[in-house]
Structures are given as structure tokens and as C-alpha cells.
View 1 (cartoon, rainbow, N blue to C red):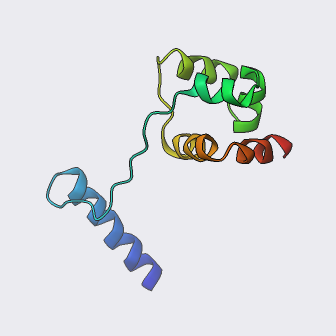
View 2: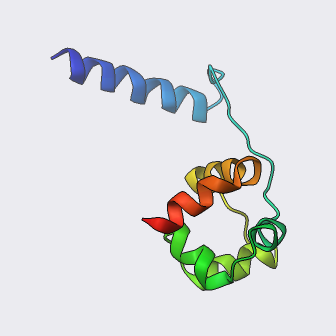
View 3: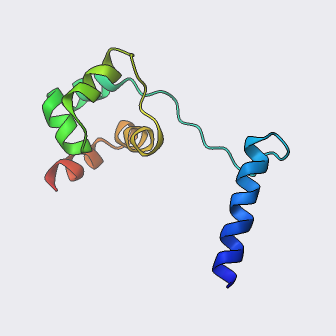
Length: 94
């Protein structure tokens, strides 16, 4: 029953945050990645980048054209790749 109670409490807290009743305990933001610059630094094609990130070429193109911005896990992964290019090669190898 503890798991259910924890989940219920967490969902109630999420609703309070969304409704402005409560402030989130932690907010994590990532700078919007310059996907084209990262890709060019890595010297890989849009197709190679899409394959390594598990996304489509159209998504890479829209990020590069600034029509959309990487969010969530994609933003986090791109931030890691930007500071540690070897991580991209690890992703690409799998």
C-alpha cells in the first residue's frame, strides 16, 4: 500500500504545481542545443545523428532549422554530447 500512497501523494503534488498552488522543489533546464553545430563538430550526417539518437532525419532537420527544439531526454543527451563527444560515438556503436 505504501507505493500506492506515495504515487497518490506525488500526483496530488503535481496537480498543485500545475495549478500554481505549490512551487516545484527542483526545476532542471538545459540550454537549447545548436544541433547543427554539434553535428558538424562530430563530422556526421543528419542520418547518422538521427540513427544514434533513435529519432528521424526530419526531427534532426527541424531542430537544425529551429522549427522545433530538443526537449526532455533529447536535450539532456545533446548537452552531454556537446561536452563529451565520445558519448555520441558510444551511442552510435549500439
